[in-house]
Length: 270
Image 1 (cartoon, rainbow, N blue to C red):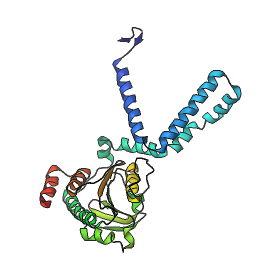
Image 2 (cartoon, rainbow, N blue to C red):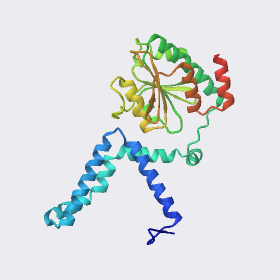
Image 3 (tube, rainbow, N blue to C red):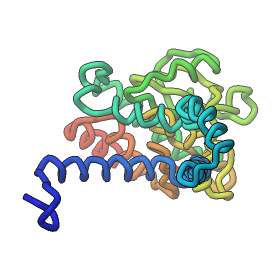
């Protein structure tokens, strides 16, 4: 096959074009709304200037850009380190690699109990307008963030969460990290997102939830102490004004409950 009758084109070329387009689209979606967009535009402008300098034969500027070109790759790695890490994480979350290297071997029964207790606690927080930040571990390890808080490693219960997020308790100011149906730590410090898409109406808890899910595959539940609204955050995206029933469904899906377990959980709450 030839294009315009002169350029030979193979089926593999079309596949390659589609792959490149898909990769560029995913990269754009990854950095959209972040400072990386402005930085990328600046680097692109710098490259265009270098192209014009080389085309016009400006010797001094050519020598300057030639010296700088040796550190371009290193500069890109440093500047786009969060985006590169996120891209590698997305690649590692491919189901094939995920099952081989990081299996999420949760016991369905313990997860069902954890979800039930967590949903009941969040419903109470929402009704009383108690701020809360709950992190549910999935595949990616959260040890770095667990070590910033107070270790627990105990069964998740509604009473425990209510005690932790009591405003008179020093542990309430931070995140609770939950893994395999157990509370691993409380008062944990999470990274704050700089994403410009996080609206000004959202406070520090919401930005911390988005920040963590930008760096890991964790599933986060946030309760606003100003409005009592429940939000869920995953992969840097937030869904606000979630009902208790919807929260139960989101948690069941995020933590990989089977249809039988999810149905049992839903029926037990009715």
